[in-house]
Length: 269
Image 1 (cartoon, rainbow, N blue to C red):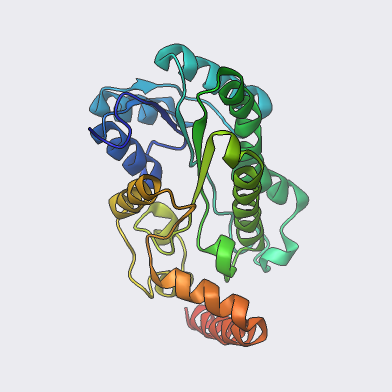
Image 2 (image 1 turned 90 degrees about the horizontal axis):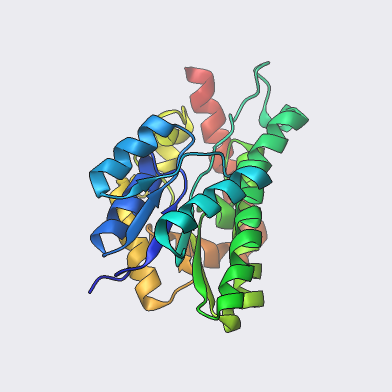
C-alpha cells in the first residue's frame, strides 16, 4: 500500500520539473492523479504517461482555480490531496536592466497571484469541502528555501515565497486540528529550467548540490508519511534556518557577503 493508495491527488504546474515529479511519485504511490498545467499539451502528455487525467487551466485566478478544482473533483470523485505546486520565479532584473527593486507593479501582481494567491484561492475552495464532509484533506505548498532564508536576486520571488510559507503555517495552525494536514516544500537548487535561467545565482543555488526533481518528490512523500510540516530536500537548510533565527544580524551580514560575490560574478560576465 502506497502513501496515496486510492486517493484523489491534484498537482498543479505538473507539466515539468517538481510538479511532474510529484505527480509521477503520487501515481507510483497508488493515487488517482489529476495533472494540471497552463499548457494543455504538456498536461495531457504527463497524464497519459501516468494513466491520470489532464485538467489544464490557470490556477492563479479565482475563476481558474475553481474550474480546475470542480473538474478534478468530477474526475476523481473527491480531492484528498492538493499539491499547490505552480509557481514562477520572476526575473531578478526588470526589462530596463535595473535591479528587482524597480520591478513594476504588474510584475509584482502576477508573481503574487501565482506564488501566493493561487494557494489562498485553492484553499478557499477545498477546505470548506473537506470540513463539510468530515474526511479532511491534505494541502501541500511548493514554496522554497527562499521562503525560510531569503533569496538573493528577485525581490518578488523571495517575498512571495516567504508569504507562501506563512500561509501554509497559518493554514496548519487554523485547520490542522480539524483534519486538514498541511506541508510546505522548501528546496534549494533543483535541476529545473528555473535553475538553468538563474545566471550568476546558479552556483549559489547549487552550493549544497542541485537535486533532481525526483529527489524533491521523494522527500515530500517521506515528510508526508512522517507527518512533518517542513519538507527539506536539502537537509542543510534546517541548520541555516536555525542559524538565521539564532543570530539574525550575523546571518544578514553573511548574506550581504554572498550578494557581493554574486554582483562581482555578474559584472565579470
